[in-house]
Length: 281
Image 1 (tube, rainbow, N blue to C red):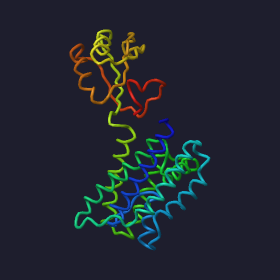
Image 2: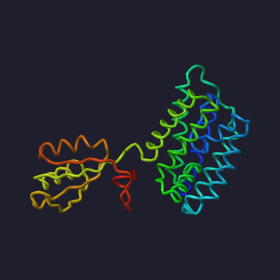
Image 3: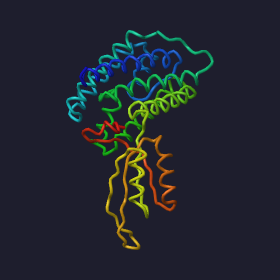
């Protein structure tokens, strides 16, 4: 199975899970969402318009307005996700029922399912349309970052929906959106989150040897110079799984307890052939 076929399958599966999350947990429990889907849900509450039809129309308009800011591949994948999510939203409407007396549980499962669906769509290289397109337009014309644009749009939609679903339900919606965002991160980045480590040690050769031997990880050696002492130093740089941090710290501690070590999360790794040891995170 080639890469494109796998991506399309992820887009379809993600669209189905996303639609089920909306129709099975969000709408029956009178919650909302951020972005365009939030507007879609509100129009369903007000006018009983089909969520699938409204989702398709609004996203199609936004995609037509913002298509030039995306690559052809993302555009095609976004079209696929919009079409299938709209179809699934339409055919699965009214499949769920209210979780009596436990709106928090409904919000948690709404976040889990919607986040899982969107995560699969993003992992395949598509977008959900809606907020992503509006955020890109805000970036182009207002200079906002994509993250800031999506956050502002989601907050505005949820705040507006409070007038329809009430403040309490809107607060539960914030919980669902937060949980969904965390699930998206896990799905897109994968379970094995990558961490970059920078090591300045008095015994760099021994650290390098122990790490390559015991952890089977490659290390990049950088030339550095002390800002105060002006002494030349070797700086070690490597990327490991988050689960390997404890083992790495123990190795460094045994060799050089006074080593200077910084650890930070890696957003993404780009390198042909790198997937064999560390997949894209």
